[in-house]
Image (cartoon, rainbow, N blue to C red; front, side, top):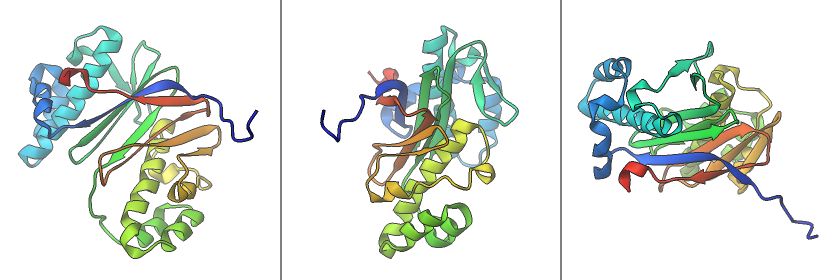
Length: 231
């Protein structure tokens, strides 16, 4: 057996990456797709674009979950745990939602707690190295500082998506992320990092964007799926 053999990863997680500004996303504008509470939250956004993106993100999530439950989208029984992580009442399906700008990621899994994060291309609110010093592992800071300045923002976002996806899988806040979690290998070409029995994998994303998914164990894989309402 070759020394570089790796076990086949089973695609136990499905991820939909959605551009909610695309013309096809108008299918998500039907007001019956979201709950009254989500509609009320959407109306509180300042600006039509922000409201529309929020509505479409939650409509996409509910359409995907409706396929799993057989419920109508607005009736999908979404609740929140004490830490704020949403879950599906009475179902083994775990899910997670992330939205950034015009991009939305929805991850679904039967049997694995899952977290997902997507970051659209954007400028940071602050210097990448200074932000890393506040939020990141020392090795992540060192790897970031070693890069040419023009590449630091993108590198920070790659680390950030990894950290966010793990936090969301764990159901904690960023201020509670384990201090020994280290995503620096992702800046050197690694496609996954492990921490405490959990694995974070980077995913393909549109140019300039970054995405990552996290779940317990190491033997799982993910499958990128097309939103069925665009078929």
